[in-house]
Length: 287
Image (cartoon, one colour):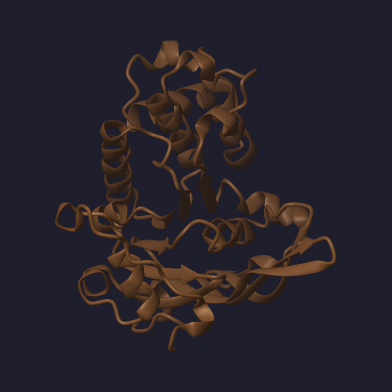
């Protein structure tokens, strides 16, 4: 299913018929099965669904960061006029972190434990902005301040293990923003955080998006996060997008049976003590 109502000038990223396969022994798993959507400049587009539906594999496919068993078997990913799937790897490296950046779920495993915070941010600056030395460090300090990390000069020289989970996540945001990307992919970026820090990170992303005008692709299974941040929402199941639309319309009046059952399965005070709804097999759902 494709989004409609956009003009060519609004689109920063167009995904058309994306197919990603994973080799699992003698079997081939269609992890992403014909996914199409458009990401508009300055908007937050949320890709939601249960664990294992293909959300993260879609994000990794866009970045061409698939595991060894994975391969993109069809479709196109266009960043403005440039087809990312047709680029040689050396050219794709210039896109990652510069025009398209990604924040991963767990900063403790994504940040390098043997490099200081400053070094991890300045690496991005040196690679994509051709800025080195004191100028790169000054830029890194600006980024720490932009994401709300206090006492920046000291933090630049600290290692990830010396920071709290919330500060590590802010460091990941700072590194992702270092080269002013046009698209920011946030893959479950607040799932590992407690609710207070989660709210702070969501507020940070909202503020930075407004200030910088970048597009955000939000990968999540948390509909509360979607309600706070997203402009449009796509619901994914078994590697396919089953419904797509504006946030308010989709949250208040879902049309696809799977989306309806997904929302009905959410626990609430009114359903306390009652069994949760369970979705049927995708094959048994009407189209």
